[in-house]
Length: 261
Image 1 (tube, rainbow, N blue to C red):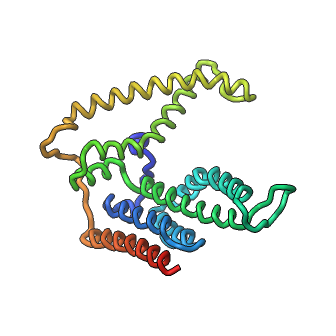
Image 2: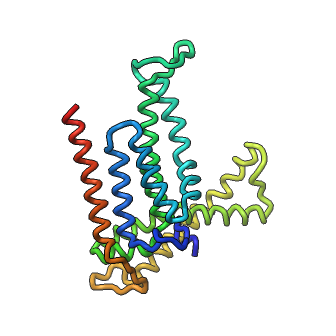
Image 3: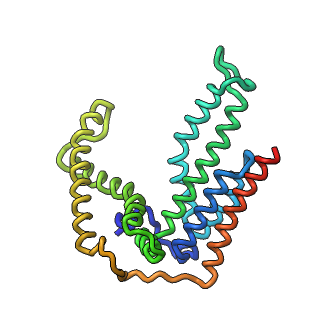
């Protein structure tokens, strides 16, 4: 069941009870704010004032911090090194012979990392607090094409499904005597016995899914019924409109700042 629900973390919280489209509106609000707001620290303020409280209310703050850190850390290190040392011109902060760390490159790296954190944390927060099947049902009720809703659902599930399948294959190969730990050469030798079953099982899974959705009249043009009933509070549509207007406000603010300066 956990594999089927992807990254979803079941919790008893008010955030989990929200309609999927309401949470999707929050994601759009955070994304627009993180990508278009001017200033160096505005994105980080958005993270602490919006994303962190939403994750805390959803009781997934610890998982969100850990997952966001794992995803963003490699990018942050690379962008700080590349932009800091290879920035054309600029003011040198620290010099190492012919190479120097540029102040402008560091500022750009800080801003880029903040935008990445906003994008990653908002999507992870949504995935942690929203059942994929509930999202698919909500989009279908709004008239979104079934093919698009399935693509979104498969995207949310692909990483957890691959991880679960890879873990099962590793355990099975270890039970047969395959050594997957030790020095680098031993690990390289163990890659092929792990990759081939993973690819083959993934192809089989794709075929089984295709047969399953066809058996459920996925491409049927008429109305469909669902066992999943979505409920929402009376004030949630107004909250979605507020998030939409807030995102438009971010765009107008960025346009005003660009024209003014």
